[in-house]
Image (cartoon, rainbow, N blue to C red; front, side, top):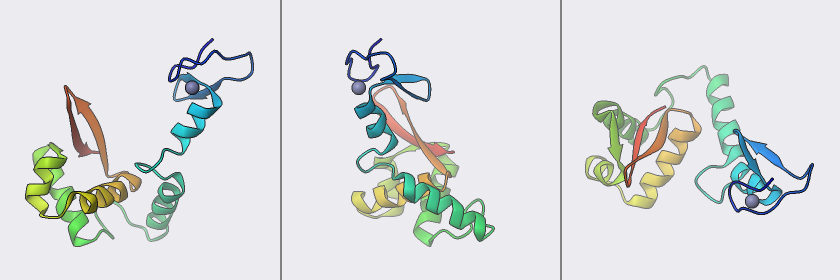
Length: 121
Ligand SMILES: [Zn+2]
């Protein structure tokens, strides 16, 4: 058996299962807690806070987050580059807002060809 991500050979009992992928411990931990795109504590925090506040959809979002969400909703799918022309913020700020929307399970990314699109969750 080997890790599907880094191809390390795994001993019996050393493998981890992550969404159906067989992984070594390092890769498993990496995917559980990836460097910046997704922060599990933030996800849990965001979803719980919203549930406590009884919020769903775009309730509780900032104007900027709503604008991003609306643009995604209108287009169905949109690249970050296109989004930047719509919401007029700098890329790092956009990434930060997208991260929040992802944490709230409103928006998700997907790859089509060589482009990464954002769409509704
Ligand atoms: Zn691995």
